[in-house]
Image (cartoon, rainbow, N blue to C red; front, side):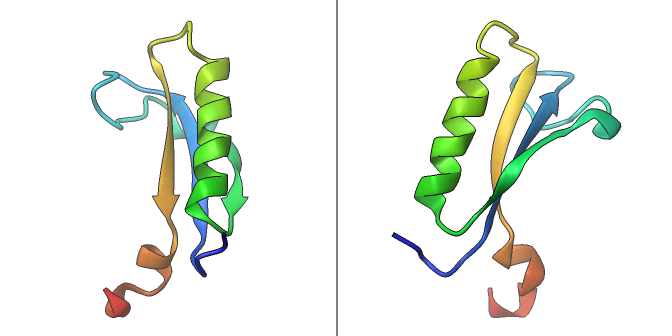
Length: 73
């Protein structure tokens, strides 16, 4: 189901797996931009599971509409 928002999925090495402090933003991996949370979550899950043996690699889903349209919050 498309919810009218855009979601970015990206990841990389973090300094602490409990945070989203990425070590080197130059090496972030952009998985893609998706039109629904469900699609973004599926992409996030695939990327995360592909790196399951590396506890210091983390992938996240970001709602781009909150950045593109902050006044609508």
